[in-house]
Image (cartoon, rainbow, N blue to C red; front, side, top):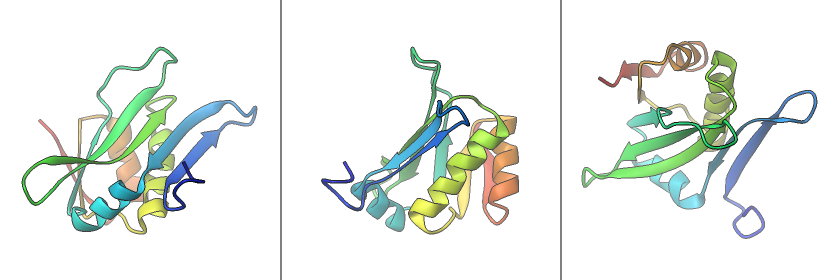
Length: 127
């Protein structure tokens, strides 16, 4: 994808043995959408794991028509704080800035990662 579109962003996190830990990817359209709809970012990682035991996380915004729009995706090997911190650090690296507000499920690891890595982002839990 990077060869086809230089604005495609991806990052892969490997452990010391070069085994997969997590990945983040954002295509050009998603990056452009984030510029317009960065006020509130919803991170949903409540989907079940896939057959490889990887958790999927979706970055979603709301456009000016009140419709959900996909802004990026991630796969995580676990739901621990360092995993979410790595994903959020890659998000900021890709987008150039942290979201103003973020809505997540009530996962303590996400809460701590946001507090540690995105101190100026207002965090709210989805009910």
